[in-house]
Image 1 (cartoon, rainbow, N blue to C red):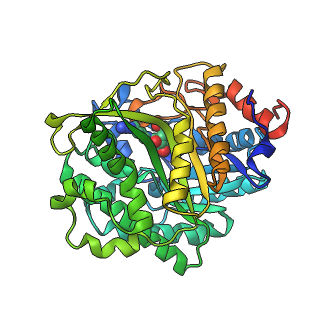
Image 2: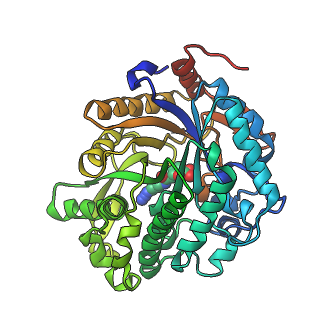
Length: 441
Ligand SMILES: N=[N+]=NCCCCNC(=O)[C@@H]1[C@H]2[C@H](O)[C@@H](O)[C@H](O)[C@@H](CO)[C@@H]12
């Protein structure tokens, strides 16, 4: 079990678990439109075993059971995402009423169980019809996204505890347009530069549109990594600093200082949209809270042969999860205290933290991972970070993007042949922390 007490985190601190539509819903039916992950995952070579989210955890049909798992676990909140293509199949225009009905039932189901809905508008499943128009490379996406955000607000806003615009803009832009690891699978610095700006422009444009509709408790969720030099050599420390710029400071500086970091811009500048600087007031539109996703640290070395970004990640010595990420809870404390000291004093939520294993429902390593990172949250709070909540990633084993289904992050095991859910010992650890007992419905 955990070595912490619920009261240690503060009376109003919220505990939750998180998921994302494409990773759990399945349900490619009832008018849902195609997304870039449907096409990317069915393109050979992009995803382990060419696995897709076609069925995933069948959450589209099994959502009552999944909400019961959250309630039985004693969680206060549920972080979920809306599938843009399920609500607006072509991305703009016609609304799919069956999609609205699904999320109506889902959100009402949360409220009936006393679960606070923490919604994410975009968790990577862009409608294919918008990709056909350039997707994140087309500046018009800011308006497409803002119109979608307002549609969600008008249908569900009165019942949402918080709304995040974008999940992990670094993954939406750099991982997906520079590294090609995620959909739409570009490997192009010009695409990466333009997506890295348009994703934040879309965020700010949507925040302004939601404010005009009376939207409250609006934020964004970014992912962070502690970047360290593989050695103490100046060139390796420089590589880590540059990666910190690419992964962390592009978003923190853009969102909270209204200015992109010069070291990253030096590489992106020839490829940035014209007059991007004129957009920075919109990019840095004030928000009400900030979501922090944290998993691991990275060690980097100078790699002059690597073109635009002369750096390379180096395998580290620490214990690793099944997805190969080092277990480094101190990094969460560092990230939380850095953000609250250097960027903003608005409330922070740890919106994702967790680890992958390959199989099994008895997961002592995951209990130790969570215990260490919960301790990091407490340490950050003691150092002045206003951390208001913590969401484990993930409620269920689910579709781990390009890794497919082997890498299991769930507190609850899913047998994909039968869709049977089985709480793991880490779920029981949270249940004990949150309710003081191990019980199931
Ligand atoms: N270089 N490099 N680094 C790797 C950095 C990967 C960052 N990926 C995430 O944070 C994703 C986040 C996502 O929201 C969720 O949908 C994913 O399932 C989890 C687990 O993967 C995490």
